[in-house]
Amino acid sequence: MSLDQAHCVPCRVGAPKLTPDEINNHLTQVTGWIFEPNPDKITKQFAFKDFKQALVFINAVGAIAEQEGHHPNLYLHHYRQVKVELFTHKIGGLHQNDFIIAAKIDQI
Image (cartoon, rainbow, N blue to C red; front, side, top):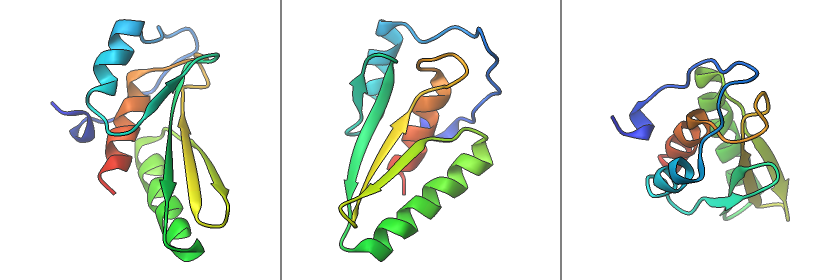
């Protein structure tokens, strides 16, 4: 099953983080996401025509996050740019849920 068709699973404190090989494999399944360490996370920048379109995007991401029960950090800057940051706070690193959300965001 592709990541954009999968659903997030509840993650508990102490759940295993993805290994470097798993992270690299998942990165090949999403578009434009960048791995950043300490803590391990993935990020992606989006640019829009104007402030209103950036807000529409943020609300669409919010709807996905609520549906999946997994929430990214969202940063609106320079009035029309949005940075999305994904990592699993409970484990302080990356989980498959982060890549599921990334794949769903890529579909917006």
